[in-house]
Image (cartoon, rainbow, N blue to C red; front, side):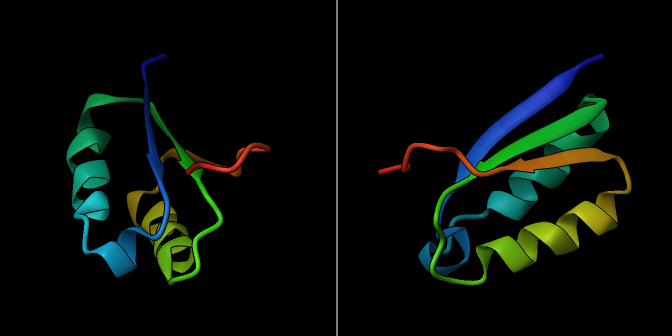
Length: 68
């Protein structure tokens, strides 16, 4: 099994193309793991929509330590 991993926090508010990055990774891996910080914008909602869109094993992890 091949896994892809990324981290994101407030990706929507900062304008970082993180959803495009995950979409480009999706064809190369069997699962995608996203560690998301305590976002104060719509990043988590966007992540949930992306999980449904990709229809593959995707896990969203909330780290126990804050991402600074």
